[in-house]
Length: 76
Image (cartoon, rainbow, N blue to C red; front, side, top):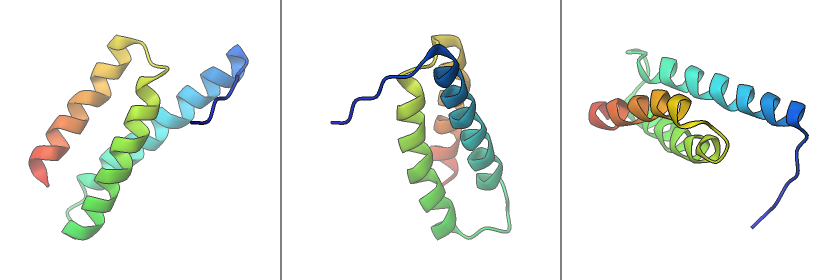
Protein backbone atom coordinates (compact mmCIF):
# COMPACT_ATOMS: atom_id res chain seq x y z
CA UNK A 1 0.00 0.00 0.00
CA UNK A 2 1.18 3.50 -0.80
CA UNK A 3 0.53 6.38 1.54
CA UNK A 4 0.63 10.03 0.59
CA UNK A 5 0.27 13.24 2.53
CA UNK A 6 -1.42 16.23 0.90
CA UNK A 7 -1.86 19.79 1.99
CA UNK A 8 -5.44 21.07 2.04
CA UNK A 9 -4.92 22.81 -1.29
CA UNK A 10 -3.42 19.67 -2.86
CA UNK A 11 -6.32 17.59 -1.56
CA UNK A 12 -8.82 19.95 -3.16
CA UNK A 13 -6.92 19.77 -6.44
CA UNK A 14 -6.84 15.97 -6.30
CA UNK A 15 -10.59 15.97 -5.63
CA UNK A 16 -11.13 18.23 -8.65
CA UNK A 17 -8.99 16.06 -10.93
CA UNK A 18 -10.79 12.87 -9.96
CA UNK A 19 -14.23 14.46 -10.44
CA UNK A 20 -13.34 15.83 -13.86
CA UNK A 21 -11.91 12.49 -14.95
CA UNK A 22 -15.05 10.67 -13.84
CA UNK A 23 -17.24 13.24 -15.63
CA UNK A 24 -15.29 12.66 -18.85
CA UNK A 25 -15.59 8.90 -18.53
CA UNK A 26 -19.34 9.11 -17.92
CA UNK A 27 -19.63 11.30 -21.01
CA UNK A 28 -17.64 8.78 -23.05
CA UNK A 29 -19.74 5.87 -21.79
CA UNK A 30 -22.83 7.58 -23.21
CA UNK A 31 -21.20 8.02 -26.64
CA UNK A 32 -22.96 5.67 -29.06
CA UNK A 33 -19.99 5.74 -31.44
CA UNK A 34 -17.77 3.76 -29.04
CA UNK A 35 -17.91 -0.01 -29.22
CA UNK A 36 -18.54 -2.31 -26.28
CA UNK A 37 -14.89 -3.25 -25.66
CA UNK A 38 -13.87 0.41 -25.33
CA UNK A 39 -16.79 1.10 -23.01
CA UNK A 40 -15.84 -1.91 -20.90
CA UNK A 41 -12.28 -0.60 -20.52
CA UNK A 42 -13.60 2.84 -19.56
CA UNK A 43 -15.98 1.25 -17.08
CA UNK A 44 -13.16 -0.71 -15.38
CA UNK A 45 -11.08 2.46 -15.12
CA UNK A 46 -14.08 4.39 -13.79
CA UNK A 47 -14.48 1.89 -10.96
CA UNK A 48 -10.84 2.31 -9.93
CA UNK A 49 -11.01 6.10 -9.96
CA UNK A 50 -14.35 6.03 -8.15
CA UNK A 51 -12.77 4.00 -5.33
CA UNK A 52 -9.96 6.57 -5.13
CA UNK A 53 -12.51 9.38 -4.99
CA UNK A 54 -14.51 7.56 -2.32
CA UNK A 55 -11.59 7.89 0.08
CA UNK A 56 -11.69 11.69 0.07
CA UNK A 57 -15.21 12.69 -1.00
CA UNK A 58 -18.04 13.78 1.26
CA UNK A 59 -21.02 11.37 1.13
CA UNK A 60 -23.25 13.82 -0.74
CA UNK A 61 -20.71 14.20 -3.57
CA UNK A 62 -19.94 10.51 -3.58
CA UNK A 63 -23.57 9.57 -4.16
CA UNK A 64 -23.61 11.70 -7.31
CA UNK A 65 -20.95 9.53 -8.91
CA UNK A 66 -22.16 6.27 -7.36
CA UNK A 67 -25.42 6.69 -9.26
CA UNK A 68 -23.42 7.08 -12.46
CA UNK A 69 -21.58 3.90 -11.62
CA UNK A 70 -24.82 1.97 -11.10
CA UNK A 71 -26.46 3.24 -14.27
CA UNK A 72 -23.37 2.45 -16.34
CA UNK A 73 -23.23 -1.12 -14.98
CA UNK A 74 -26.74 -1.69 -16.27
CA UNK A 75 -25.92 -0.32 -19.73
CA UNK A 76 -22.83 -2.44 -20.41
